[in-house]
Image 1 (cartoon, rainbow, N blue to C red):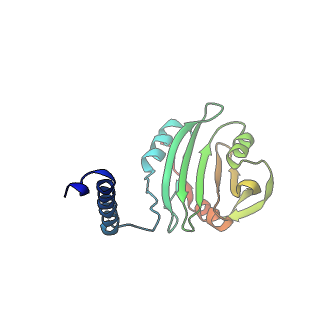
Image 2 (image 1 turned 45 degrees about the vertical axis):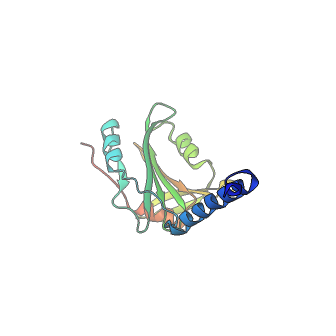
Image 3 (image 1 turned 60 degrees about the horizontal axis):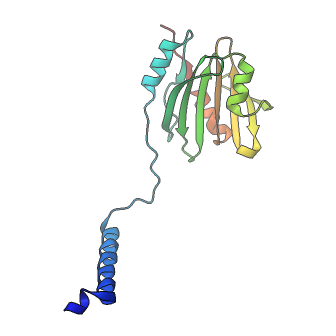
Length: 176
């Protein structure tokens, strides 16, 4: 009995028992092979942003089907203006983000959010024109709409139809 508790054999037996226990634990522990994207509600962030800015805030009427809102924040822009960010994991497992601000100059804000100032076309969504921008090295597509009081940008790795789906759901909430 003493030879199994000392020396090399004792070490080997202890190691085997530990590995067998760890293997058994891994076998009986349930594991998911599917990626879980945490859902993060943004309605309070949008309401708070509305209290901080002098214009009616734009937000989706509802989330696009199959999309998961997974990030949101209010930040300080380069000119001191407030910036609202709403991030999503799309139904096709891509990333999309809706950003808005009254930061001036509007063109500089839009270019910073889109990571490019080069327009590649326009797209009609809900009867209004959105400027399309594309940065190939980042596989980043952006839709930009500059309004008199606010600039709207939808950007990410999502394809054009997905970005348009989010743009079509945007509406402006009355200030008040």
